Length: 439
Image: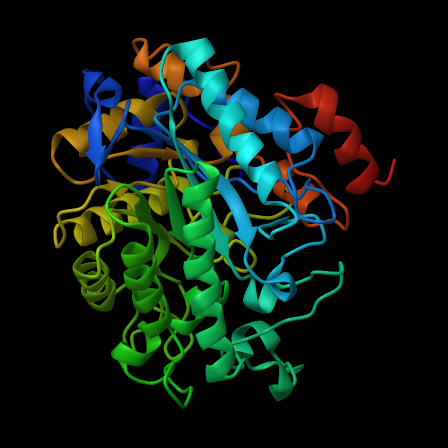
């Protein structure tokens, strides 16, 4: 069954009734236009453009022409925070041959694009956005040369089934020690290059995220909660010490994977995939104690159960659940963990809410359940959605993301550079036809 993204309050309420869920809903969305402190810095408003990887850098790992086009569109869009996409700190941890890669060779290119983003936003909107870089290692999804070259925390039969990855691809504790050093180095470089913050990425089953469920791994990074969270928590602590109080350290963090124990974080043994956020709360408090300034919560794995973090509307397969149920699980889970900490929190998974997204996020923010509205796919379809929201909730239904996942279909093809096929068709429809349809 296909579901349409709501373009009116009536359509939104109808979908909520179908899924038997309720959300806070505020007609007054003025909170989204208000400033908020993040560490020692100030975000101009409560809209975040989440990290959206374009797979369109140079082979050296620098921003290329489509990359620059995307971020200048984002800059003009008026978001308070622009989350620069996944940027590798180790070459073997790149997810594709054109993933961003921070090195001595590419550092000047990163400095230029950060400067250009800020200048463009000032010119268009009169303020500088906070720009945060997402530092990553792709782990089991590494493809630095365009073919799978996984580096894993442990073997996982949910993904590997009858073809387990060779144990030689399980990273050693020494390798993880070196990764921590690379992440901390990346944060220090990001500050020098003009970024306002660095995200130690631990979501969507990339390497740091996978470690959170390494219950059966031996050594310093497996087994106990302390060990499974060691790499993330120590990287956050060391990065904060290195960069100081005038730089934001954050994490895009999975609080629930959607897989059974012992292969998923955020579940109990013997309870299937029912969420239990006890350890997520413990981890959030630990990161706060280690100096983290901001947390960006998410769930699921876009490669295996994408509806968990990217509620599904229509496309090539039957939606496994009503998309409003998925949005509700995401936002209520984020709210539950937010109760335990004092640092600001960003929401996720809201693109399917369509024209009601601002009203729902304002409802949650007004109730203190999170602090920012985090838009992902919506930004590719509607890069000026932040200005539309902060100028009085003037979202144009004809510009909204329809959650068709065509951007992801392009991304999954070799050489694919994803963007919105529907709303930015002049650039991305030819790519979709060529790579996905074979035309």
